[in-house]
Image (cartoon, rainbow, N blue to C red; front, side, top):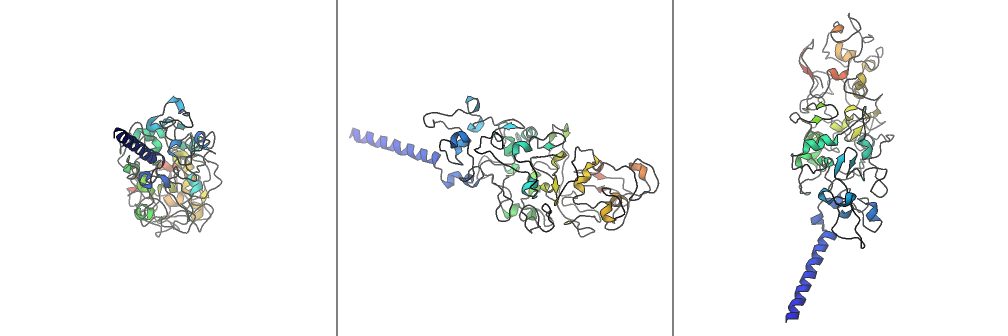
Length: 440
């Protein structure tokens, strides 16, 4: 009798151990949640740390990122530094801009991921500019002046204490749920959704879902006035997937996503600029839901005159999410074409390179005028423009180079675009009504 009870207890312990081991080693879909559908959890191309894949660990296995409390074939591979970091990660969660747990795999050189990783720019993936040589995330976060990268230290500082983030949180997790983020091939027949809203952050992976995968999370849900830009070197197909879709029903609502942080109330300190970032009110700015005052002169697919009024842009139409060779993460490919040059700082006339991609310059409106000048838009009601703000007789008020009546061939110095045009900008000194107007 005593032996029978002991046997039962031993059998119960064995069954319990087997059940627990099953949960750890063979998680069910209910317990795994979205992980098996993620880029990291994929059995085809998921996480695959070389030191573990070489001894038979399958792609997507949790142990590729998280240290286990067990030996592997009689020995335990030590994590970097001898002990696991926060969340049992095998490498330090975050050190600096180019040294963190995520970066150890998301690089094509000396990557912990078997075979390395290729991660392209948004201009390459969504814009179709396949000549862009940037090919990994570490490179994207390595831009220095005149280029720029999303500053991970500033992100970490901003999110700490918000939305459930702590001082131990990885700044990459501000935008990406590592257990849900998907690849996005950016083709009409195959899409994935890589981001999760920081404002919806939760330690429950089932609660902190992807952003953009539902119909209610697309740009056409944010506004019926979204107009997709052309894909590179095309006038018939559009971002982000090279299809004929133009209304944003195939694009994540990046306005709502980005304005969780970049809105008109949050104060975000920039280490690079040594000041706070300018606030953004996309519901009222002219490139957002706010209309131009009367008319505009746009390059296709943004029509000129009054028919183009009310069109709305997504943040990614102009900005790279990780890094760019230009100031303020400005894309190098916009609306089907490459910028005419690089943008080196906030205070430069070089901003016309990106403005030119959607706004007609003087020569496009009137063939006898100069290229890369905007006299007509600012001083003359002709062609597509019926909304000049300034009198052409007042040159010296703003420009150096002489007074008198100006025209579109005048040699007066060009002004720096960002003197008047930037997020949240307005003027109160226009010569024609409305004398106070938004300028971006």
